[in-house]
View (cartoon, rainbow, N blue to C red):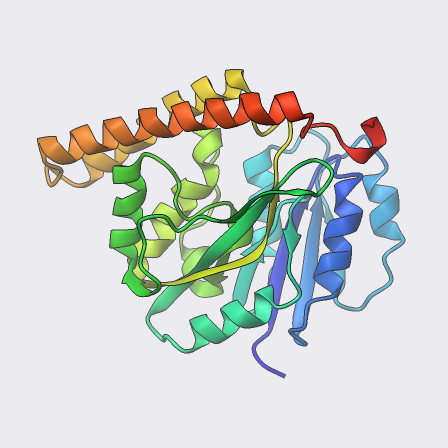
Length: 283
């Protein structure tokens, strides 16, 4: 059996993609698994769908309508009982070996608090747009957590990726709680910044799942907001280093975030032209 792993899923109006995610989670080849879903007051049929799941590994907790994203993420994380925890958003996917591969990596490194990997980017229909994205600027193997976060700062982007790419050691994650969405588009990076410096990070340049893009996650308007919020995160990071950031590093970081914004805008326009944000139900 191996270590108990908790996959936690905050849910709010998760259909239709929540069905596909649940199929992927129940197909994981890691035997000792619990799946905890936090239903955050959905107005679609998500609660009814969750009520149909009959599997002893699955547990659903209910949150009141109006629960914030951070509160929902925090509640479902604190409900986890496993030695390791992975948070997966409701429209993302995991490959069948994802959990077992990251458990093996994290278990082998006693000082590691996170295992991270690459992921594919898929469109609303599930077609792969980009393969093996993430971990840019990181070397495969064990890295100091402080170096991983510094790479995010210098490159002007979250090189770790969305939470589906991460397996946390539960104790380290709980010590860093709660999830904080005061700067909402870097909610995940803010948590990584709290957890990673507590130890090492295991980097695996293998795709273990897929992040789904949609009009709610990518847009020309959102790109501008994301630029502003990432710059705010960089400024907070600089202040936390107590003068340890050189002017050259600051220039690199500023150049990086503007470059990433330009690339994001170009990708959005191309995907919108292709119709990649339209789901199969819209076709």
